[in-house]
Length: 479
Image 1 (cartoon, rainbow, N blue to C red):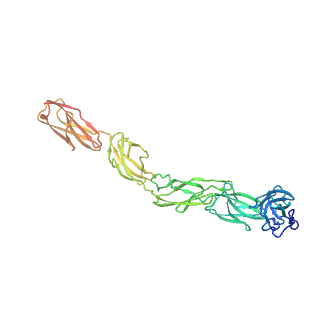
Image 2 (image 1 turned 90 degrees about the vertical axis):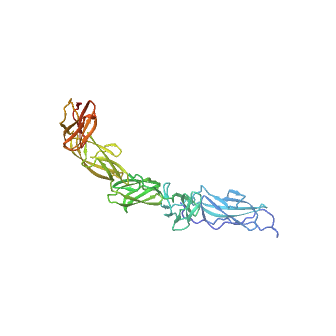
Image 3 (image 1 turned 180 degrees about the horizontal axis):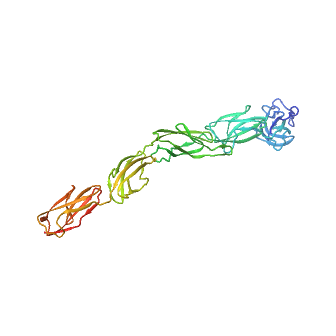
């Protein structure tokens, strides 16, 4: 690790040694001299260092040689960007004598030397927050370095675009960086005075908050709820933390956790809540946060509708007489959330749109309970009592010519009919056609025999109020 190094030896060895060449005259150029190696005596250097030597003003330098402890390291013909000192493979603390020898166009040369100390161990530090391949941050990022090497010279944030976006060169080792508009990823670099650098795991930059969609899963119309309700809220953008509040009360919470090596996300939030039976407008607030800390919020207004459908018609009517083995009912209803289905005595027994059926059973009074549900499972109840009547009325001809009788002129027929739920009418049929009817007890008919042929058939038929029918035997009359 780059720590303080022992002081470098002795004074600058830099000496100018002129070799070769002719004696100087008044109009000759200034003598060549290397006035600085570009290094400091005892300077701590890493495996690679760029430096800039200096020579006498006006000197026409054509070639530069770099020596390390007297051994030629390399020759440079272009040093505009500086010279590079490479000491890789040397042990830390090793003292090296670096010599710069410059040549001019006449072949004369001069040199200067400087002692440097080798330090190839990168510095160390404890970085917080800890970075990693799964660490995401957004907004203003604050990075702290503690327990740093005592020769630390710089801490920087380095973008994946190759640009240093922020740095500090002294304690406290804290960088505050606004990530908005910067590279997609940054790494932490620490550099010591020798130029050694260590890179620490960095951070994925994310300044885009998650997206909250509109709720789905409504049983009725969108935006209307009642009682126990489950709704789904689609999310995108890597939601790591979710909070759902109904009328200000936290009802749902989820957190996917977050560490440098793992975290969880979800693409949906749930609302499982009993909105009760109080009509109102409920407010649902959703908060979603991603791993980087970006937060999104959205509010929804939901209409709480606990009211069942309105029944607009139900037939047969209460107290109606019905007959047959099956009773059929027609029911109509309306509801803002849509009518789901009707049922009778707990049975959804449809025989067609808005039509239900139930077994008639024995004659007598029968009470039926109807429920009509809307799409929120609210229901409205209606009760009907009907009278089942499958018993035919009694019918007797009390006076009339017998079967086979010869008749003339106008002939009277008298009859008696009875039913426990009432007789609706008695009809007179001649030759199978209804020619008269009587709706009043003491049923009587007058038959003008001249209107019919020489032989014709006479019959009476009685209906009760339920529609049951009784017919007398047919009498044939002659004229």
